[in-house]
Amino acid sequence: MCTENPVRRAGKPCQSVRGSAIDDAIGSLLLESVAPAVLEVALAVEDEISGRVKQATAQRQKQLVRARYDAELARRRYMSVDPTNRLVADSLEADWNERLRVLDALQQENERLQHADHKLLSSDARTQIRALAEDFPRVWNDQRVVPVERKRMIALLIEDVTLVKAERIAIHVRFRGGRTTSLEIDKPKPIALIRKTLPEVVAKVDELLETCSDRQVAEQLNALGYTNWKGESFTHKKVSIVRTAYRFKSRFERLRARGMVTANELAKQLGVCPTTIYLWGQRGVVHQHRYGNLHRCLYEPLGDVVLVKGQGGRYSSTEPTFIPVPSTTQGAV
Image 1 (cartoon, rainbow, N blue to C red):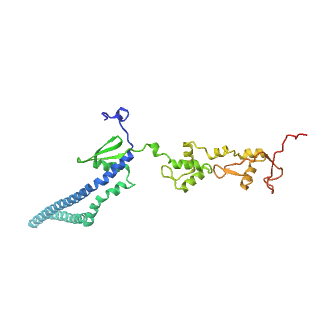
Image 2: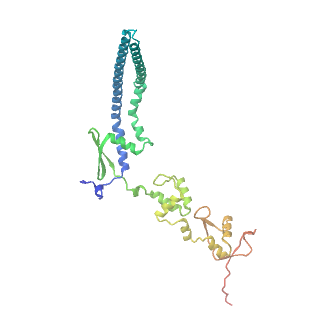
Image 3: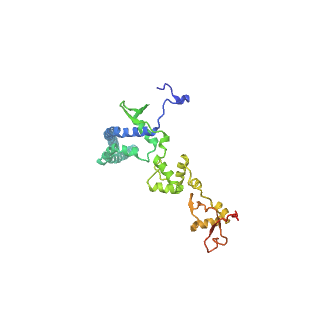
């Protein structure tokens, strides 16, 4: 057990566990455990709202009673004044009118708030409040909710989480309020195994490279339904990464090992330009094997032959003719 914080000391941690599996386990626990508590909270909120509305209504009624009393008192003062004393009468009349304006404003505000309170306590409002209890799984699983918000929800519900790493990962959760629960999960696989291409895919890549380029291998793998460790379709770049990681020979290296030659090498042997070799390959005069994109290819060797001059050129209408190289040795006399 660790007795001090290794982060503060810049030391080696006591244990380390990748958090994705822990997050999934805690999320599932919340979805199972918190829903009943949320329902109770929602009902308590409804009762709290109802109680506060009643308190506010009572307070407004007291204000109205006080305002009516002040208006009635101002009216009596005005009615009891001597009409001949115009200065005092005008002052009391103005005070009465002001009291009436205050009373009217309070009555209008009270009617508005009563209408709002009625909406707040309506059946639709109560249904929405109760629906909050059922919305926790939807909110928790919503992709638009950022991790920071999920952490805030967890902080409101969970006091702390203790992890013990052994053959399996033990998770001890203490909720706010004292309730505790424990669960276990399997240890996460090492990242090297998670990102490792499946053995059958590796074997298939090696097999297909005998007859296909990287791009063709990717097309064949996708047609067979294979994916990489992320579940993504293959591309020629991803095939190249697998080939390099497992040190497989490329299609080019395999063709060269089988004796295939380049256009330059074949052109030098026959005394023509490489462009002529490209044209012969397209016309099938020489057998070509593609190893890269749609243009890169190697050619099967023609053996010890020479090209008959005047035939098979770029602008010639006749096909090229190859004959064995004449022997330079003289027969016995």
